[in-house]
Image 1 (tube, one colour):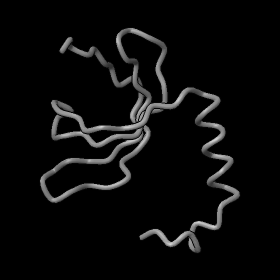
Image 2 (cartoon, rainbow, N blue to C red):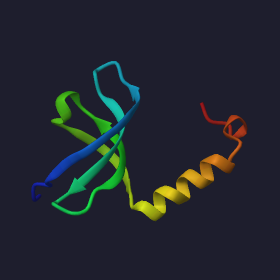
Image 3 (cartoon, helix red, strand yellow):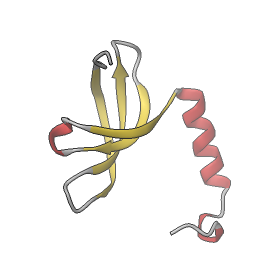
Image 4 (cartoon, rainbow, N blue to C red):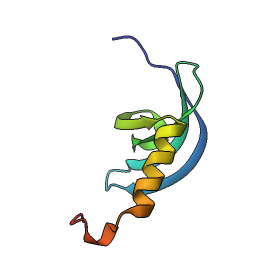
Length: 79
């Protein structure tokens, strides 16, 4: 498998932290020297390892924000 090049262009925030030091983060990331995109995934300490995540372009990020603002999150049945 080819190496994936990434650069965290801007750290937006940490959503949660696991007991082994991994953090679920929201960042702007440039993948393989492309334009940065909004990225949500788990990262190991020092950003040396990463878990699966989701990467959104600007239009997708705006749609997600709109959905979340309209949703009644307290009544979705999630923990």
